[in-house]
Length: 114
Image (cartoon, rainbow, N blue to C red):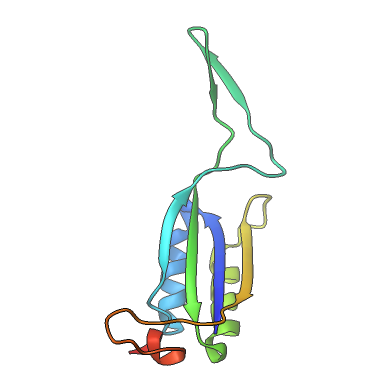
């Protein structure tokens, strides 16, 4: 079992979601996040208050996935999220020791595939 975390531009989220769906990966968690990387933040002053306008909207996806689907998920995210510019995002893959479905008490791959 693996956990894939991907941070992508908010403007590319629908494309990523559709690409994952085409690979039969339809279950994941996502939420809006903020941050900045190599492009750094930019400040704008309006009526004496400083506002940071350097953030590009981001979506973080978390996918718990069986081994056979990992490569397909990475490919789908990479292709759909790429613009070729700084700030396209990151994908991380980590090992999951145990998964338990609360409702069914199933574990491992069965916990996420049932």
